[in-house]
Length: 99
Image 1: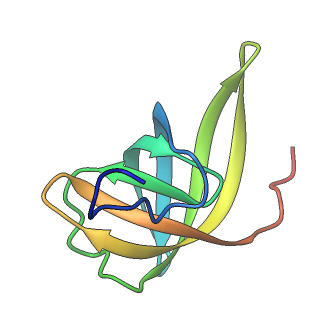
Image 2 (image 1 turned 45 degrees about the vertical axis):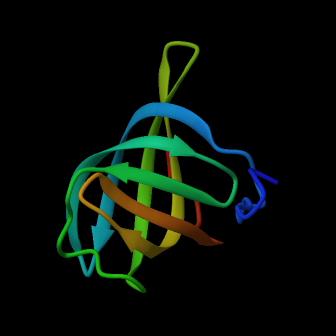
């Protein structure tokens, strides 16, 4: 509970991040920056007019692990867009890329 009339809708705790993410929508890929991340969602910085609510996208996160960059692929659905950025809910996993 956040106050007398407010409540938290999220089911997983968000963590602040600053990581690059590629967004693939309809075969077009663009680079963006993730600002926070949870097991069930992500918030991408900036205005992305091509990402309307309900759009299914594929995300590729670049995560540094012990000096290497690991790629994590997720599918997500756009839930909302503001002047600050775009919120997305994670969908089904996609297969990992070959190494």
